[in-house]
Image (cartoon, rainbow, N blue to C red; front, side, top):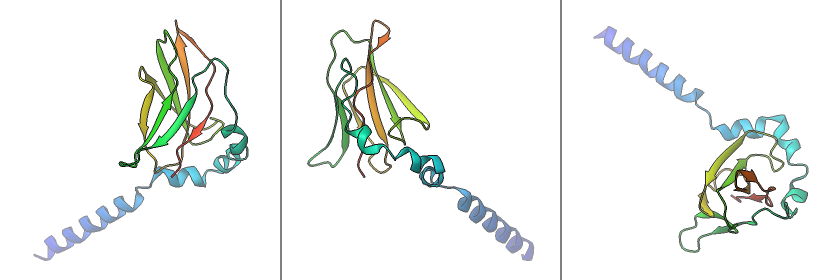
Length: 136
């Protein structure tokens, strides 16, 4: 019986240790020194209109649901849209990229991220749209 208690005690310590080592990735974002410096130009970037031939990106919140969604203008004869998501408004940190045929996407509002979109027409991308932040 004493061996079972010791085994249970050791197993409990291992589980607690393993769980305490799991970290929210947003902790690393804010602890990363380059993250704070990439926010230096946030206001200017968010106020920039983007490339003239790119879709125009908008962000909205559902009145009833509270869901956050991105929506961009439709471009004729588009192959697909390339949407990028990044933790820095100047897109200098890790970028997540999505290829979409729709002109909208629901996004997570709990982690502050920035988005931009371009249209790909006949295999050639337009310039990047304006940048939008999902406010949390």
